[in-house]
Amino acid sequence: MLVPSAAAWVTTVVGLALAGGLVGILLIWVLCDPGGPEGDEPDSDSDGGSRRRRPRRPPPVGPVSWRDFERQFAAYVESCASERDRTRTRTPAGD
Image (cartoon, rainbow, N blue to C red; front, side, top):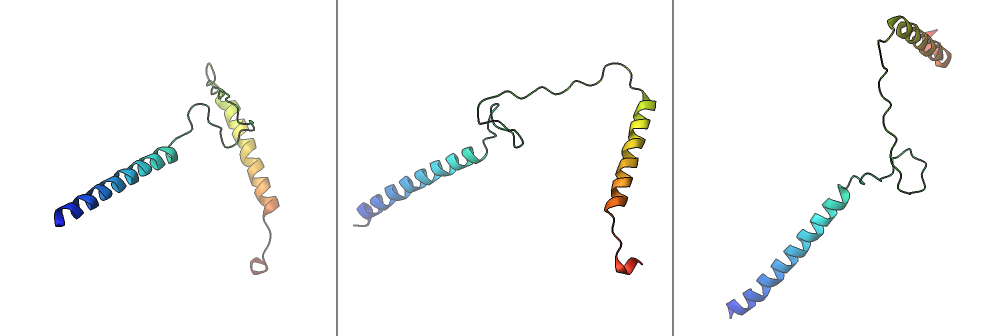
């Protein structure tokens, strides 16, 4: 009497385990899908059509002028410092 009932339960358990495993694999596959090459980027304004991404801009050709870099960097630091000074507010404890 024990053997026929055990056979019924074993097939049920094996069937449920296979179904659960397939659902689990499907969920992992869907959640890990990067979207492929035609996936939308978060900041894109496309309407969902398949559009290729623009290639990266190539690095500058030839030698880079360090004087120009230092001049541009100094202007950047100065603009950041002036922006920080404009947004800084005084607190009553700091007076």
